[in-house]
Structures are given as structure tokens and as C-alpha cells.
Length: 232
Picture 1 (cartoon, rainbow, N blue to C red):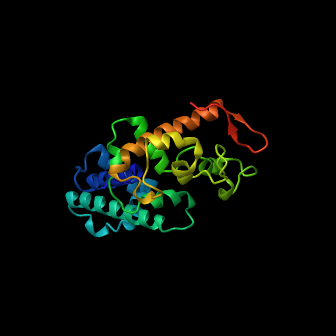
Picture 2 (picture 1 turned 120 degrees about the vertical axis):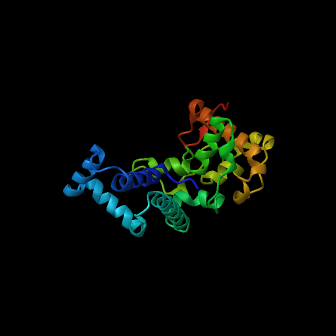
Picture 3 (picture 1 turned 90 degrees about the horizontal axis):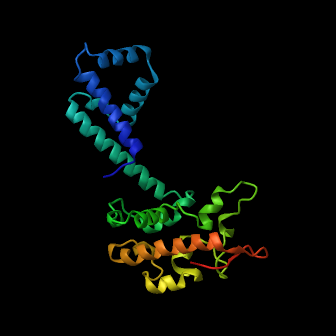
């Protein structure tokens, strides 16, 4: 199981502390520094104590190899529990799309794509790290920020929120690309299945490229805020 780098660093910190405490000889400079930190009650030592309590490792401090295995299990299980809880939280609106496409904690096949740019575009879409209005609006100054339900698409006349589903299935600007790379019909829960990846990858890559080019070269209609102009 892959976990965030921040958690890996905490796990390595714990393992380093345990090695200094139980393996390294008392006359080494590293062990002397550790003892000084303990005596001073440094922030590092306080953090170690908090991590041991949080991850319930107090009864596993003996053998170094067993301790390393325990820190791995605890960080992985703790992260998975947090992940599942986050998906169940209705207040995390930014996860709305992610929750529709990802229901199980497992390795995703799109990570095996050789082309880095295409792999990155898919990752951007999955994590809502993109420039669609639904996400772009979150980062505007508070006095100009629109509610999510008013973040309409500026490229078509459907007056729909420009979210991931609108981008993938409904926006007329990508009709020709959609014809070349058909997607499973309105079924977000299966769109990232391995069989769909070839079409999905090409569609997302070309559609975002088309969108960026239109924004760069288009002319904003001041009456309705819609982008008009040449696409690429």
C-alpha cells in the first residue's frame, strides 16, 4: 500500500529514534545527541512520544525489526482509515468527483501509462487539480467568488456547471474529440477502468489542450462572460 510521503517521513523518524535508542552504542555522537534531546524534552522527543501514542506502538518498542514492521502496519492502516472516513464526509465537496470514480483503496492502472504528460492530465482530473470553473472558482478572491452551483461553463450554451462530468460528457466544445474517443455512457464509476483508459486518456489530453488554446486565443463576450473565438 502506498501512503503519503509525509507519513513515510514520520515512520522513518520513528524507526530512526528506535534505532538510536536500542541499537546504536552509547558512546556514538548520535546516541549522545539523543540523550541530550531526551534530557531537554526537545520538540523532536515530544513528537516521537505523540506518534508512539497515536499509532499505539508503546507495547512494540522491544525488537527493532518488529518495531519497524509495526510502524509500517500502523501508518498504513491509519491512513486507510482516514481515507475511508474522508470519502464518507459530505462536507468535503472537493471530493465529489473523486468519490464517484474511486470507491476502493487500490493501485490504479492509469499510473502505468508511459507518457508523462497524459498520465499527469489524468491525475489532475482525478484530484480536481485543473482549471475547470468548478475548481477555478474556489481560488478567486472572496468578494468575487461564485457559489459552486453558479460556476457555469463559459464554452457552451447549456448553462451547466463546468465540473468534471460536464467536461467529460456534455460540453459541446469537445464534441469532435468525444466522437474520436468515445467514453462509457454517463458512467463515472467505471470510466477509469482499464478497458476505458485508451479513449479516456486521449480525450482528456486533447480536450484540456483544446480548452487551454481557446482561453489563450479566444475573446470574452462581455454580455454573458462566454469565451468565443478560435479553438486549436
